[in-house]
Length: 70
Figure 1 (cartoon, rainbow, N blue to C red):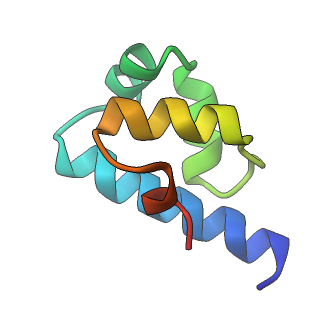
Figure 2: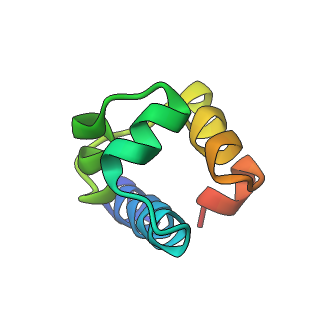
């Protein structure tokens, strides 16, 4: 899988999980201690999210970090 494809897949999973909770990007940002613009960049497949931030996002969403990966 190409790097761009991985970023898009992670972003799509993140968006699906966030929307499943009924949260805005701003709410997820608050819960994960990450900026909403950063979360938007991940969801659009523009950001190469690091493992520490994957862990923060997974914890905020109540899922395992591997649930965010393709």
